[in-house]
Image (cartoon, rainbow, N blue to C red; front, side, top):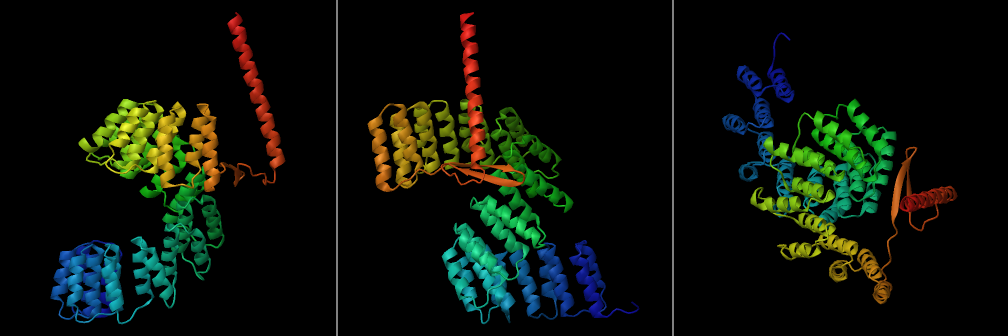
Length: 521
């Protein structure tokens, strides 16, 4: 190019800072420009803000001989992106002219900061709105758990785009209404990967892992390329369903698409391998991680705890502290779980005491439930009750559930009655407490009380929830529900169960025979 005009210089300047090269080079280029226009100044301001250099951006903005609405919007967007909402609000008030971008930037920034009421005031004050404005306000409501407001605004939205629909899918799923979320998802004419991710993640978080897997297959068939969030959601579904083969396939996809190096993906991968019974592979993933964040350490410690490997868990816990990482509430919960799996009562109580004194962590209901469970397993039910009494807040269902389970194990009728009573008060239609208390009474030979509890269940319309399990065979998940004989191969299943039962009985008889012969000798 023999001679560059200002347009050429501007294009080169923008390309330079957008390419991620060092900001000083872009600034030197700007200083060398023979002439500049408002676009040049806007570009260097935007570049400084993109690289997080607010001071330089402010200096260029102040020096600019002329500013248009795009200049103000660039500075406004940068302040919002850097979390400087007070400065952004002041700048918004100074703007000589605002357009839809200015208002939308403030709506989005205020909503992300949790100031939803102020965001709505700005939204209502907009002289005109576009699809992005509506989507920003709806997303703000969803992210701040104000789903009713989000739904009302969505219904009032004249033209619904994929961004707003995706926000509502997330909202419906957070509200537990996956059916409405799926109807909305199916109605989106052109879906992007974010909308697919929202629906898949919604299924996973609501315990519909199999539906998430099915939707992922449809996504693949429609040619939509999965991204980082997709793969993490699928790994989470594989963890919940213990689908090791699909989990390995997802791992392979991540390797091919260069997403395997992501710390968040590897954390999900460790969880999947652990939940599928392969803690060794979790260990390999952890050791090969380039960046091990607090979640990584918590995940591998939780994996060891789940598999009863207390010594490895405690060794990593101490190594984590040696490296200068401060344990958080999740770390402590995983270590308490590790103590519980091997019955280390004193160690668990010592760690529980250290939470506040050493780590400045206030125990949550989950920590108390874990300690109650550990003491209950050890038969120290009275001590477990003392921990419940000194809780600084009302005991939740998980705490009373731990005490009820321990009462059943050790045949403590009095404490079983107390725990069941508290559980029924919080949820009178769940069958669990009734069934557990009935079993406690039955073990104690209190058949009159058994009949009374069953009568209460009948009177309140409480029905025992059937148990279920699943297994993966030939890439297909087979689910079995108690009392359900609709499986197409039920006859074969019953036949095999009878064979297994017969062989178990034979082995039991042979064992008894060996014991009797040993005693005679």
